Structure formats: structure tokens, C-alpha cells
Amino acid sequence: MLAAAFRDAGMEVIYLGLRQTPEMIVEAGLQEDVDVIALSILSGAHMTILPRIKKLMNDKGLTDVLLTGGGIIPSEDMDELQKMGVGRLFGPGTPVSEPIEYISAWVAENRN
Image (cartoon, rainbow, N blue to C red; front, side, top):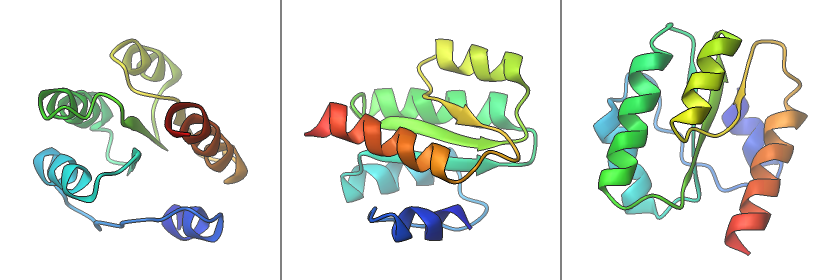
């Protein structure tokens, strides 16, 4: 599980579990004062869920929080989502070290 890998890499992780609505995810991010919201989407709903979360983040003032994630997302959708302000996305088979390095570098650059 990626949450455990992030935790093992020294990140504080708040795992919300499955079947969370975009509203629940953003509210948790707001309440917990997070640096990053990361999602794993395997359902194919990435073009619905990620833009909705990004809009809610912007509406709630979380404009300085990274939205990233991964799953079964075609590269053309990844490009479109990045144009919307979503951070780098990772596909199946990506070594766990890549999202860890990406998030760590983003936080170091944007939070320290």
C-alpha cells in the first residue's frame, strides 16, 4: 500500500480509506492542514474526481496544496489534468520511490 510506503519514508500520512467523496477528501485536507493530497484511482473516474477535488481545493483556499496521485490513467488524461493544476500522476508499475521523491521534492521546494 502506498500509504505505508509514504509513512515508511518519513511522511505523516492520514489515510481516509475507500469510497470517500471529493468533499470529504478536501474537508479532511483542510482540517488536517495538509501539504499534499494524494489519490489512487483505479476506477477510471480520474477525469471526474480529480478536477472536482482541484476545484474544491481552490474554493476552500487550498491553492498551496499539491494534488497528486496515480492509477490507471492514460497519458493524454495525465497531460490534461496537469493543465488543470493537478501535479504529476503515476501509472501502474511506477516504482514507489518515484512518487516519494516527487512529493518530497515538492514539499521541500514549496514548504521549507
